[in-house]
Amino acid sequence: MKFKYSTIASFCIILCMMMPAFAVITVEHINGKAAYKDDKQWKPLVLNQKLEVGTKISTGAGSSVVLDIDGSKITVRQLSMVRINHNMASSEESNTNIGLKYGAINAKVKKIAAIRTQFKISTPVATSSVRGTEEEVSFGPQSGMIVKVLEGAVGMENANGIANMIKGKLVFQLKTDQARPEFLLSDRMGNTLVKLYLDSMTDKEQSMLEQFGFDTGANPGKFVTPLDQAKAKAVFKLIWQ
Amino acid sequence: MIKKTTFVLIALISLPLIAQEGGFQSVADIEFVNQVADAPMARVKDAVGLFAMFYGNRKSDFQNNVALLRSKGISLPEGMQENDPLRRGMLALLAAQYLHLGDSFMYRIFHTKRHAVTACVASGIMEVSGSEWDMLSGGELVEVIRKVAEKAGGDR
Image (cartoon, rainbow over all chains, first blue to last red; front, side, top):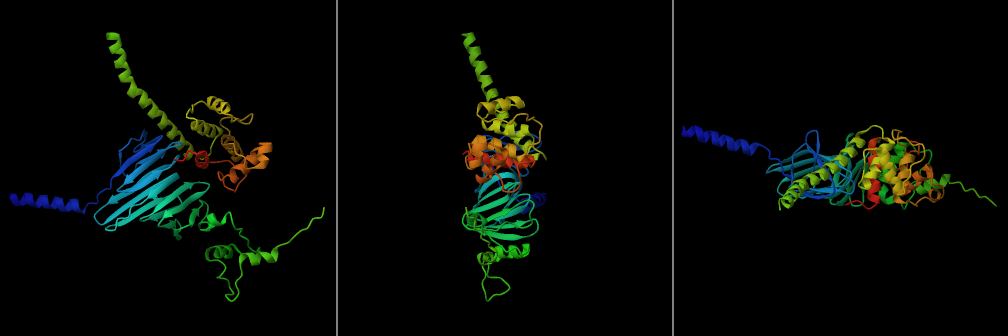
């Protein structure tokens, strides 16, 4: 009989060890109006509330919510809606996926050296993978998904499998109706440079030029900059008055 | 003595109810935003409701919200009905009035929908593509409203 009990007890312990533990998600700070939805109804969010996988969180105008996910902080900005898609933690790995339906979030992901950390933020167009990083992610139907990295690096992958590594001053922007993201430096270039292309260039050639610069042309012996090319078609009209 | 005790008791009982009422009001606003975000086509009443929400006094009645906006100096063009589809120009006009945008010289002079769109594009609220006649989805409306709120300094 004693043997039976000890066998059952050890079996239970082994079973518990094998089962993945769900990391705790706690509401750390609420500023303004915020609500959560775990079934069909929206209910007011309260401080120190524990949230489960599948819960949706939404914020009102001028409001924000800070969530603590095992030391990592997620700030849900105003007029945003997120869903906790997946959240699991074990002694070997931690795996979290936050879905951003619309709005903006800031993610400060804590790097735990001992375990493999996977922290993903998904939108309808792409997914960002963060590790030991701070990033600002926003999504809307007009501007698409925009990712700005404040610290570290972020891996991006869209539904077509196109991957990008974002760090420093690079900005990832993928619009809903496009297969590939905007030029990664477009945010920096927007105010300083004007992109000029020849009329004879195909879309593919233009995208190659955007990705790799002017040093991948067919004639490697001669560098042709977009500005050089533009010179050829520039027409000046002088109007005397 | 009994009167005073009764009064204190009523006050103690009603306080949590008042607080809860406030909670429900905030949930109602969030529910409204989510309903609008899911709508395939945004209506004029949705935009008016969202702008009224900025002032913390959104009503379910369209005319009350219009009156509230008018009292704050935001006017709707004449003949605008609550169930009319929301067009980019209309939303730009509301946003430009709410933010007192002066980024477009032409908007400053004419106050037309077309120039309001230009002013909104210049201030980063709207995307470059499209015209003032484009009909907007609920998701697009909420995105613009979020950018308006950020621009107004409400991003916390």
